[in-house]
Image 1: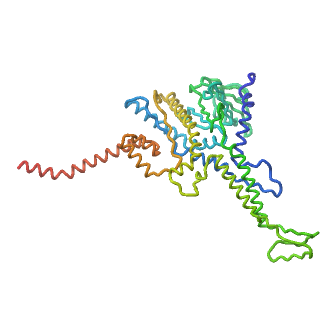
Image 2: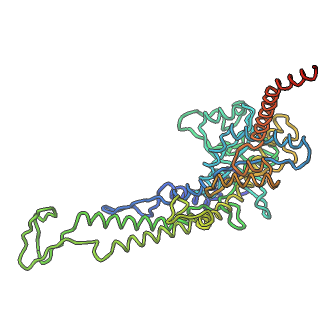
Image 3: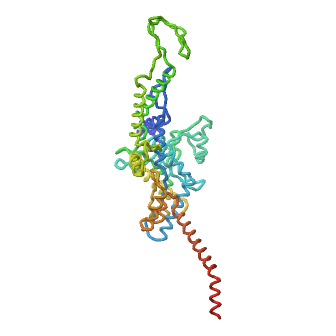
Length: 471
């Protein structure tokens, strides 16, 4: 493949990975039967896989926030950390990252991998954070360190007029990709190739740009849903539940067919060569020979339906066990559970969420570092990210007793274990620093009001005392 261009190499790379992506995405969207239904056959699809994926993603992303702590002592370091934190929150708001993160996590759970791209928007002069489709991403990493990428390629398609809008400088460059006719069906393949030092742009197998990397780092963060040992690309939540989901669809379809036939009973005629005008309806009269026998077929006799229901319950429980999502995760329990008992019941989901959050913590830390680095480079804010510890704060998975949590934090503050800022972070307040400043300002105003009221109430008394002394 050394004799091939980058776009030609990409067309032959990672075919198995792309096939898995397509299969997982189709299964999540409800394409779960391996064969087509024949005439009279019923194929029901109860997309339990989608419900499990959506539920796990909701638990994982509940209450995610961040905080920056200075690694140096002094007011200057604290002020720098506070300024960097406010800057990050502004970037999060400008890019609506709360919604983007949830959508990206859902995509990651289904496909098995996801990515963020952090760039600088020259026109709007701000950081732009996007989540490119991982189906168009290709990565090269060090043989002994899969966490270090030395090249990333992003492949996507654009209409010819979109290329002119996104890359206006290409109009002035000669080449086979410039000057092609613009039309609704005329699409070109665009490939971006990034390394720490260079950026290349390819359009339809022609390299039209080769420049130094303006950022100094590869602006992509590619991460797995769950890691496979010694492998770069991750694994999806879908393959584990594929077989159980298909068997559940089959079992429910069979039971549905049985109940449908029982509601429209089958007439069984014995020792009758031909039958006419045999209708199964109230008040129907059948004329049959003396030695013949007629009856309705009862498909529900002998407890056969119970066997189907028990099998469906077994499949149902199997899906919960394999997906590590207990029934309690869906908001219902067979009995009332205390806090500790509920945590034990939800332990499989808690462990799964923790495994994923370990990966996501590193991702969001790296993304915050890239954001601050771009702001330093393009806005002239030196040392904005110097000596900062990026702390990712995750919300609780289980429902909490708010009153009890507040009482515990009050005791921790009074005993000197927690600061007020730490307590606010534990309570899920998005911006503890601003909230603490608001509290200080409010406390200052209250104390000032109290001093003024005390001065007014003691004024007449003081005048009497001064008058008595003068006499």
